[in-house]
Image (cartoon, rainbow, N blue to C red):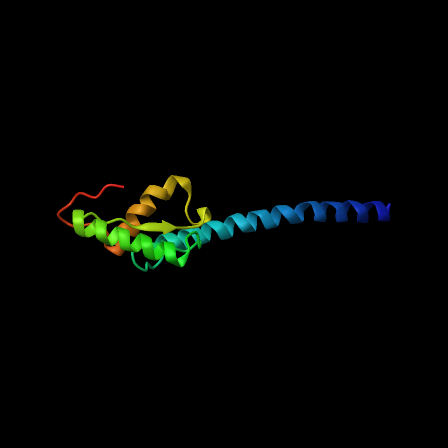
Length: 114
């Protein structure tokens, strides 16, 4: 009886452990997203590639193209690569606007659209 009880307790404790880790990961992700919302990432030029999607040469070329475009049209473009865990799909548009405002993208006399 004692061995059976020990086995049941062991089985239950092993079964509960992964659930605790999963909940912990979800809580950590929520904290990460909340902190990211409070203080958006810093930017470096028109292209901010935190996910290392572009090569240095591609970033330089994109920055050059966007600078020329901005001088010709006065429209500003920013390219940001970020991990999809940084923001929920529902909050993506709101984060885009928040980052644009934080970075000062857009001209006051022009209507900004995202």
